[in-house]
Image 1: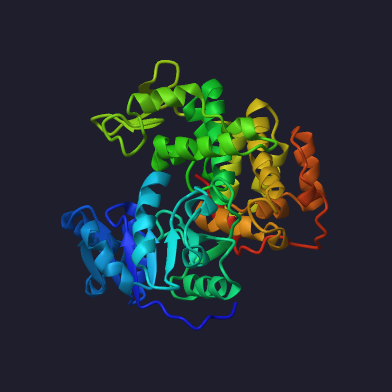
Image 2: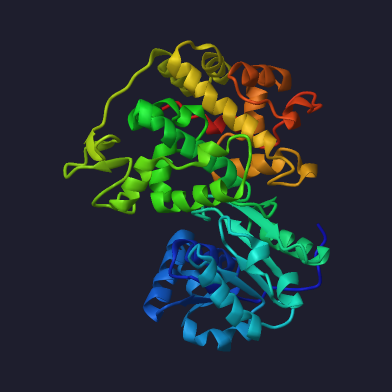
Length: 433
């Protein structure tokens, strides 16, 4: 994409005491750009600076970052080229600060939100032409030092030249893997990823947390099993994402976004996952660091089970030995209830992803934007990578239909010869453990 005639010399980071604000701001500083880290107090702003330094593992960042409180906002914003908002996922809070920024920002200064799914159009409603033309979502994935995916959600009023400048800046200066995303609830990655995660939580009520995470573990193409991922994200964050989709979207699998009642009881009890160190979530550790698992019926933690299923262990061993085709053959042909469940999830992930082409990402991008966000934002094997591993479009469609899932026209009508997936080295997402 061509570059517009503009530069970014100074950036304001709002929400710099939070994880996303501080670490995202650190990427600007790593590029040698002057940054002002805003927080409620200087102590919190300085804590954000320390987090950014730790991510980069370099004290050099300190010379590019200055701490500030929100009382200094009106003083600093007029000299900033980019205002990067990383505040809480709360529309009222964001709008409060956007109102302050709008009054004092210089013409054509970029304002972006790191929101993971709130409407870009809604946040800019009633604002000036200049604000809307320079407003977008920049959804960095957490932690941005390890996950380079960046969903770009441009406000529809933003000119092409500004879009091109931002795309190039994020790709070449901030080293992001950009995905152009439509302004839909949860955008692209979270829309697809949290459908899988919430459906796993629904099935955990029948099969148990240990069994679900064993069956859908890293050997099926993801860095972390699904319930462990929810613990990492936080059950409160999970709820905000799936509720947003459930109440604002209608699609073929919308009921899988309905958060199970037991998870609300977990949240009410403070069992939010890893952030609730004394209460845990689906998993916990006792005083001796032994792994505990949630008993869903009683909402208490019990000793984790050791589960071993023959075909799963054989698939893991094949991956460990580098025989990826053999592992996929095992996944495709294994018999029994557990094997059917694994195929339901893997094929459902493929089908749901292809069905979102043209809805969450532009139709002209095909599956490739969704592939990139799942690979570089979630560390999951991309959906078209599964199509390739399963033997191509016809074979994947037949397996999806056999699993009783809707076959998306975006996949069925795909005219492709050879490999579809453009993400390199997809076998690295299959981990034999």
